[in-house]
Amino acid sequence: MPNRGTQAREYERLNAGDLVFFNGGPVLNDHIEHMGMYLGVDSDGRHRFISSRTKANGPTLGDTGGDSLLDGSGHYGVRFRTARRI
Image 1 (cartoon, rainbow, N blue to C red):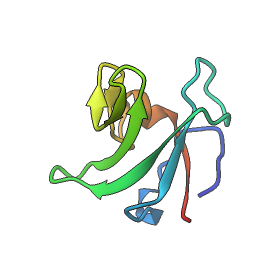
Image 2: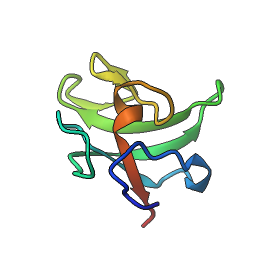
Image 3: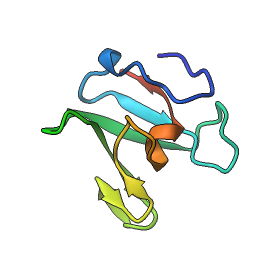
């Protein structure tokens, strides 16, 4: 999935275990500052990931920084830039 500097929306290309990358800074571009692991689609049809957060002090699916959703208009959704498979 290419990093175009905007919200990535090619969810159909993702497999559980893929690494997902985000621009977490104040300037929204192609710079990567945060990463997580894609978990798949939840029971509500949303694309979930897990990552370590400063506010929660460890791996989490959500905290005061936002829910761990790749799709939508939430904090991490709009900052989702790319994914890679190892």
